[in-house]
Image 1 (cartoon, rainbow, N blue to C red):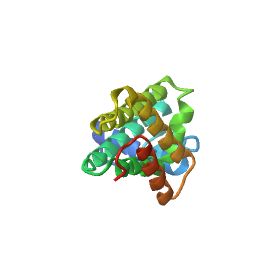
Image 2 (tube, one colour; image 1 turned 135 degrees about the vertical axis):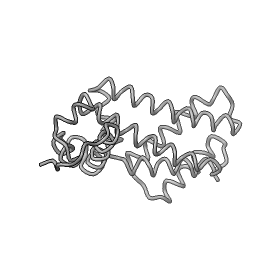
Image 3 (cartoon, one colour; image 1 turned 30 degrees about the horizontal axis):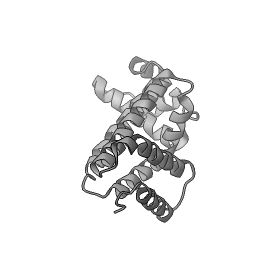
Image 4 (cartoon, rainbow, N blue to C red; image 1 turned 60 degrees about the vertical axis):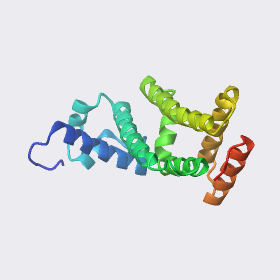
Length: 183
């Protein structure tokens, strides 16, 4: 039963719902998380969630936006680190949110909104990789293909987990193959 409490600001209530959904989606998975479970965790009724979010996919997008914004903020602090370290940091972050990553990949074929979010996510990170390659002196004609190779390797590391040392070795070889400094 939702707890009784004083009225809460709309943005604060929305944030509470997103926080509850984030925890449940990450720990239990999207498919195992009902709107009822989210409502209970947020201390609201299930109907209240629909005042803020059209459906579960829209709530998932709000969760993804929140997690991505927090990730980008932490990532910005790494600008002085070598490219390989930043790639490995991104792999660790995505691994931490593997259930969200898996959900997005599954839901893209079921939801135009999730597919659009996923495309935007890739655009952001592929743009960063392309920018880093360009700054590192990669030939302009090769930047697109090199970016795709790096993305494919990252996605492979996510779907086939390795130890930190194995991931480091993979990233080092990858960057050497595209003729970039590893550290």
